[in-house]
Image (cartoon, rainbow, N blue to C red):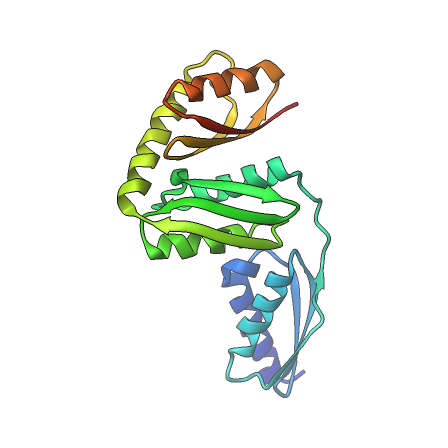
Length: 216
């Protein structure tokens, strides 16, 4: 291998490592006179395409032979997938994720509620699509900063009340509130805790509760 080819491979590998969509994947890069071959395993077709796009953007690359394999991931139940998405949304700083409801059915996810900005609306889709197990994302969010912030504040009030309930103090809970509807996801260790959580939520003028808590 020439020093030039070695330099190109190193630079492409570094670009893949630094790229958020594929940073945690093991991808082998082989470069020969501008022709690059990618081998290894990724978790989704989206990650496979992202790796190819990143490599193809280099001025030293004339073609990409994408041999990456999509590694099967353990399918999540709809409730667990919704919880994983809610957590991913909540971890994004500045995103009013508590004003979003997440419906997951067989890998298809629908987002409803409010986004504070157009960027937040688009970002919510992007984060959701990047979660393992999501095959399709339908974004029905409305851009309305007043409603988004009001619902988020209401959500935090309800969450604080839930954390004061005996038995739920340390439970892994995620909550979304949209006007008079709410969705709670997470894991509890007793079935009665699921019922108590819903009862607590309804005390806050919530008429409809999607209780996606898993008791195990």
